[in-house]
Amino acid sequence: MSQSGLTAEHGVPWPSNGISEIPFRVYTDQDQYHREQERLFQGPTWHYLCLEVELAKPGDFVSTTIGETAVIVVRDAEGAINAFVNRCIHRGNLLCLERQGNVKEFSCIYHGWVYNLTGQLTGVAFEHGVHRQGGMPPEFRKDEHTLRPLRTASMGGLIFGTFSDATPDLETWLGVDVTRGLKRVMNRTPHVLGRNTQILPNNWKLYFENVKDTYHASILHLFLTTFRINRLTMPGGIYINQDGGNHYSYAKLDYEAEDAEYKDAGLRSESEFRLQDNSVIESVDEYGDGVSVQILTIFPGMVLQQVRNTIAVRVIRPRGVDKTELEWIHLGFDTDDEEMTERRLRQGNLIGPAGYIAMEDGCIGGFVQRALQYNDSGAGIVMMGGHEAESQTFRASEAAIRGFWKHYRALMGD
Amino acid sequence: MSIAEGIRELIGEYAERIDEDRLEEWPDLFGDPCRYLVISRSNHEAGMRQGVMYAATRGMLLDRVFSIRRANLFEPHRYRHVIGPIRVKSTEGETAVVHSHFIVARIMHDGVTSLFATGRYLDRIDISSSTYRFRERIVVLDSDKIDTLLAIPL
Image (cartoon, rainbow over all chains, first blue to last red; front, side):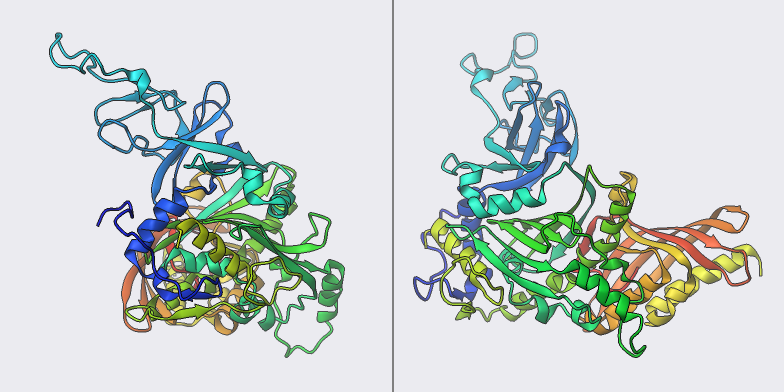
């Protein structure tokens, strides 16, 4: 079996043409996994690469992966941002081993082949041999060789890359609503407050679906209910782009009412279960629109979240059919003062690998994966709120999950 | 009891209260306010402050325990801490600066045992009274990867 996925003529069969019954084998099938790497991760999709501020100066680079594939993104001498596959054209060695840094050029440690910051091959060690013996044949021309390039685009200080020439421009691809949602959150210059990576014992899709699942939040995550944090949520909604794979859901909060509620809480019966220290949820309406939660996903592997005053990019990186790396990149903005930073850090307890309203998502996918072990016939049911993947004005719905499968089926060709 | 013995006692007590599932008594080992931060080495060395778990008051530590007990859902498990050499770096008046190493194994309810975390404790310990307390405990994790989730404090 090759890693290319080309050996499998068809993917896992579906019970119908619909998107509300999901065959369980999509989470367990090795061939399906290979096809996904090729058709989704290397297909006509945009992927988060890094923050623009991480590439402030010429020569600044970040090495990362799109799906399983190693890539480098770098700012060149002219200020342009370039991305290419992190693989020397000579013998396929990893060209760049560091995660981040600044270089004048990329030089392969194996045989000293050198590339400039646009990915052009500029040097071959012993190109003309030693004492005129050996060397590359005369027809080999360095200027005909470059690292495999990616297209790049940026929006809201986030840099994206795509392998495919067929991918529409980023804004078109995101759709009007999701573009608006992204620009709303990323409306200032971000900086990284810290990163954490969680190893999830499950197929990558189980996590991505979980993020799009507006149905589970108040059922699986009991923190807010247990501590009687009256969410006082006003109706939110879900926006789904036309292809289905990108979405954002949001909910508003009456911040003033919540404040009043806490001041009252001190007068209540002491037997009532309450937070000892409210600072973990004390939030300010930093966008001035009352939206306290906005979860945005970009197909197939990126999440941008605002949960109260926590802002984070989450990147989903498949590491085999039943293993996924989830990186949390916690952000602050250039306008933050110390008080705001401290607020973000305290609320940081809500999210991430130890997050009060997130930690369950770290294990729930693993429970599904275990249940599917040699038990993956049949299909799951994703029918809350209907069979389609339309935007909705309520959140007790699985529409955004269906949107994922709509885009998935279109790109997988099954 | 010497200062060194008092510090060793506090650090040993900390591990015991967690490993023996006496989590309700864990916040008592901190002053109030305090600083408890679990953070990866790469974040810490880069001067970044975002960790995985953070508490600035004893109330926040208590909330962490209540939340684990009553709200959060995960598979039951315990830890076993092994603490390496405890080194008192300095004692400045009422505060001792203490570094130690740790290895934590995670034992799942079905018996599966794995190496869960390694790292260093960077402590500032209040030695002004006979009962020593952590003013600050920074748990610096060698790895920035966490398997599945972090529920119980390290």
